Length: 450
Image (tube, rainbow, N blue to C red; front, side, top):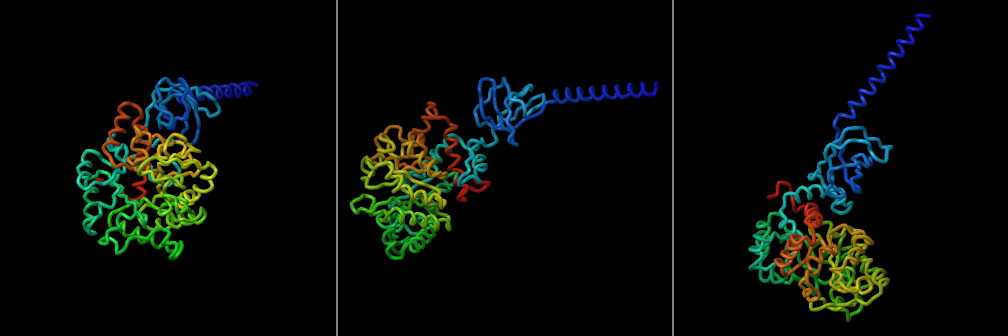
């Protein structure tokens, strides 16, 4: 009997020890400061919802302020996290925003996805002026551009026919090398080398033995095979000169000889023009020069926007069925850039030129799922030159790169908008990030760059 009593007492003693140990461990764990790293999903008053690196989601009552939804944070707390609880019963000691981490909401699963981390690290080293500069593709002016670069760190230059006139290959290479040397971040160097009517480089026999033929001529000579051959030859010559971006091909569907764009277009129906877009982008991927699908969402029978505004009165259905397919096919083949026209597309946006229209850009980003670089036509063309704050409106519409003849005016307008808080520096950062990621993807920026 005494032996049984002793066993019961001993068992009770062990149970008490176990309970005390559990309580002690729980107390120790609850008092020990631990960390939770994650991404801010929601804010509501003092409540914040965080998703950690293992996709665990926790709602916590905090007193520290959280900067923005999308912030990467480290939360220091005591207590125990419990995934089964809607609201965590923990005590928050402090919160730190991890500025070194790329905000999750900035990361796109698109063309340049693999280069966003590098681009973000580069972005953090740049001044506001350098970030604004990345958004501008400025018309090259022989006497002024080098000097402008000292104060206005543009993202790139567009070279027109006059820049190549009477120059030798060595002259052109030196011209481009000089501006590259002046720039902290490697420049985009662009031309409109469409062939046919629009030739910038091949108008000079010192650079190319004969002018590049139009897409129509090439197609008649040898179909899509000839188109691919021409694209490869063109890319090789451009790259040798130092050009890394061609503002071509024209994939507007135009079959009427009276159309303004007919002479520059393939001149065939939607299906054939789509195959043309596919052929050019496919061939361009073999070289280092990027190509640009233009003029989104399709020029149709519109008038010349170099001299004034032009209104497209076609139905939405007609544009979707007839004009978008070549862009869609080119994008699926990996087109890195799309240039948007200045036409007012009445059935989509009755007020704004396409280049300044959020609705047009939504179609490009969402319907066609384009994750590359959206470029405006030159904002100083007749169709947009009289519009106030056009550079700001172009960015707010969804463009990444603004072509402009007056780089200083566009730069100043954007910088003033940031200082006046019409837009935030964070807004500039997100656009500049995509441009920088593109430059990394193209191999223009390398580690340990100056």
